[in-house]
Amino acid sequence: MSKVSCEIIKDMLPLYYDGVCSDDSKRMVEEHLSKCNACKIELEKIQDDIHIPEKTIMKNRKDSNVLKNISTSWNRLRLKSFIKGGLISTLLIASIILIYVGLFKWDIKSVSTDVAVISDISETEDGYIIFYSEINDGYRLSRLKYDMDREGNFYVIPLRTIIKEEAQPPYGLEKFYNFIDIKDQELLRGKEVKTIYYGTPKDKILIWQKGMELPKTSEEVKKQFGLN
Ligand SMILES: [Zn+2]
Image 1 (spheres, rainbow, N blue to C red):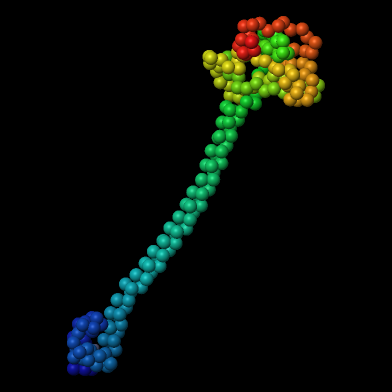
Image 2: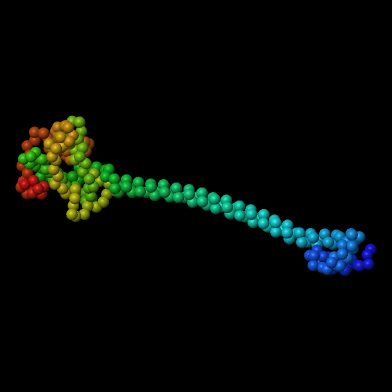
């Protein structure tokens, strides 16, 4: 054993470890340590005490990296679901628009002739067929479609949207003087017009047939078309 007691060395070990003791003290401690195992173990304990927090820090750092990774993959998931959600809502909006157009804007449904009244059918000197058509169910008519089949049957088809809209004055196609320029239609379609119907091939009202005598159009109606 050395002249310096282990107690004094133990007191000095922290200072020695931190390197803040004088050169003399340092020499003294080292000399003691070279001979005293108990104090060497004390020094190792100090080193361990210091090292444990470092290890803990390293571990914490690892943990925080794990957390970072989790948060990164969480963000990736969120981005994925965000994109997914975006696609889904785009599809949803597209479907809603299609349904809306289909139900409210697409003139697809022909109107039954049960609610149609054709009156005041006449013929002008130029061969126009003029008639008044009225839809009486109180709902709007969106369009009249003209169609002709191979046999020369000409159809004036009243169409409306699937979701009906109430007809409001001033009325349009619901109460309407219409005229068919037969010569023009024959020229356009390259076929002779033999009959004119209001409605569809399955549900129709005859307006005119070839050879049918029609009253001459009144001056009053002609004026409406600017035919005089
Ligand atoms: Zn000692």
